[in-house]
Length: 127
Length: 347
Image (cartoon, rainbow over all chains, first blue to last red; front, side):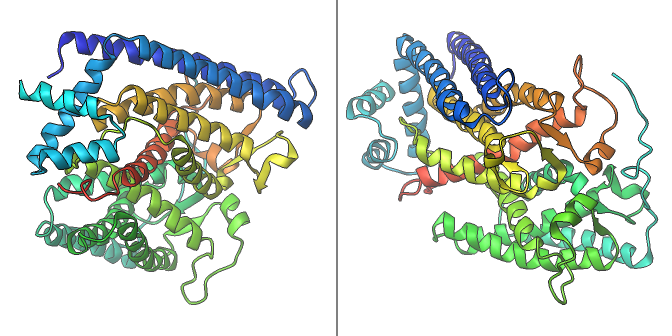
């Protein structure tokens, strides 16, 4: 069950990431359009497009991606999000009659979660 | 907002119903009701499933309305311009029956094989349905669409060869849309992914966008872009590339950040983020003359413009509709590929 604090964090993240994607995405797009479509450079300037336009757009987008990643990693709630995610899955999987070993294997092999993360989620549920 | 009453052909078409068409409509209703009664023996929540397919078909029909005409169905049969709820019900039935039966009787085969079977059966039925609506004089094609399909008809069926492309694309999107929502209504066990497979997701989104863009090409002209970027008529890899990158990043980042959210919540965030980014870009492209809607599309516009812009409201609605179909069908494939091992489909 999500607490008030969880809801606050989710909303803050949605707004933050939405804003970054919104402004970052548009900045990259308009820079690319500026060059590709020749506004100020003359149309059909394909060399500029390849040399400057696409790399610039990719560069800007990658900066925004790194910023998002950094924000998320630095978030103190990140670990609780992992736990919540895994605990929710474990509970649903148990209801579908999977045993704990199968659940752990699935989370590890398919989901890519580490043994520690999986163990922690199981232990949290046991409490 | 400026209101221009719709006096164009888009609104003033012939709605007068003929006797054979009345029989056809009764046939659709009888088949729909009978199918739902029979399918309810094989699966649960049949009305909800039917509603989801109907919504998927309607979104597609609304979005592609300028490409084809549906005439002579009677005044009561239309919901928007010449988009008819009767045909929507018919298409939804054609799609739902094979999908539910295959899901019921071929449970153990892999999902991708099931999907090919859905497509095959739905396609075979759809060919007959398309033949019927053309023969009855219900279906005709917009001039822009005719320019693409020309008068090249499949012998005996008398439907365009182009149908061999657009029916499977239409079905892939709508079936993908339906199957995505069944993950939610059937409470499927979806393994949360720690890492995003960016390359695989990009390919899936790219295929969905490119196939759809090729199909809806007659509706809009992508102009003033570098010549090398056009790969089919006026479909440009630059223009399609923008949508692909936005959808791909929006979906990937939301999946990464909101791994703990429920599917339905994540879907709302995908749609919100992607719409917020694509809508102003589409508005700018229209305003700058890079995207020019054809006469059949502009005929469909009501004259209402989005606040403080010159963008028709239909375009503002079309963007999330487009994203709904593309994102739902792409995510369905992503989930299938992520959960393709033995425990994923347990519930």
